[in-house]
Image 1 (cartoon, rainbow, N blue to C red):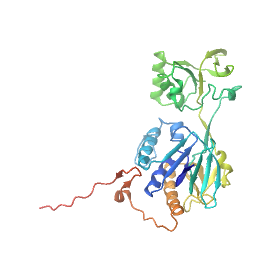
Image 2 (cartoon, rainbow, N blue to C red):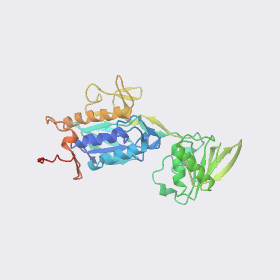
Image 3 (spheres, rainbow, N blue to C red):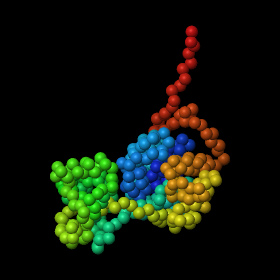
Image 4 (cartoon, rainbow, N blue to C red):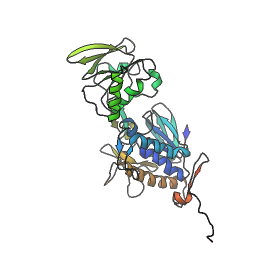
Length: 350
């Protein structure tokens, strides 16, 4: 049983920033996310694409924003459980909650903050016969540990940033990397496209465009893929097939928790604190809805800030919190570190 003050479901930018705001209030957080790494859509879908509407950053790459948020919350020592989905919730007699993941791990907290973006993301699977049979037997939709592919033959399918970036990375890990895309054109960062071109010219990446994986072969595990190219089919022996066609957002099991849902989003009280119809459960970021809702990262940051103020009152009933600006109060981390503005020097001028 993992116990914490606030269980944050979702490790996207809103969930990460909530850790910082909670830390200022001396509240501990644990983050649960179905994806294998922190950052949500920013890390999984477009880590190398620029964002232009983050205050103070005329331009920041999505992946860099995640790195900055992780650095910002480091001193508050949040716990992370990644690669697991929130499955069930039980309200206790004392008003606290126990959330159980799809892998049986339990989390106990008085406050739940659902920051799941557009919901739990599930991979878009290609329509290939028997694909479910080969899942975890040679087919991977996420890359959690690149070393798993050390000296192995890998076939990657896709035409976006994820397919390009992992092809580049695994070219120095796998014994053979083949990148397959249905078109000749790739939709990704220019430097990634150019790097893949260089690796192809150097013989470190094989490329089949336009082409498509249409079949899978192997008795007990994946041994080869069938590729259709220019109207003809051929078989390519491989140890792993990694289709990277993006993610499909779904509210998932959270939709069965008794929360008020409207168009696949969770209704909240935006006049006060973004609490749901269940006291103690909040929804912040893209996962919530209310009149005038805008699905912007900066709006999620605002919602996280107000949510943490309300969470403080639930966890510390009757205790008044006096808001102080960080330029005045500084920031004290749970790890013993302190950040503060330089003290003014009192000195006479003669």
